[in-house]
Length: 95
Image (cartoon, rainbow, N blue to C red; front, side, top):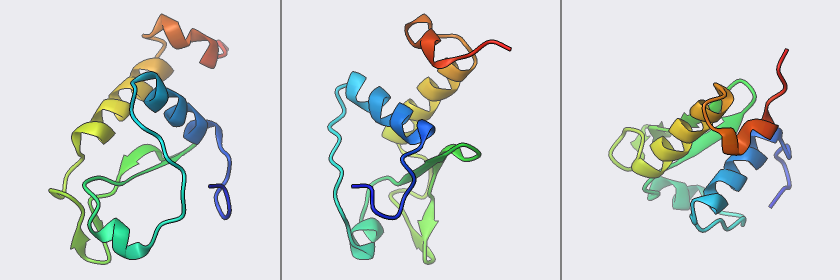
């Protein structure tokens, strides 16, 4: 849930993509310990776009590389922002 994070455009875009791909989305508070045992972690943001987290506090996350879920969302997001997916053309504003 939104408490100390920004309800950003990139975040909302990734949530929409995940739901469209039938990836369950649950927004809840979590502990640092839960992150240590996560299979994957990624961050979103205007500058970060979709950035995998490979380690946290010197602990490897998953296999220490972008996981399949992160990679899939990242690939889709980059394809959309390059204008290569007509389904999401409304996300873009040509300049």
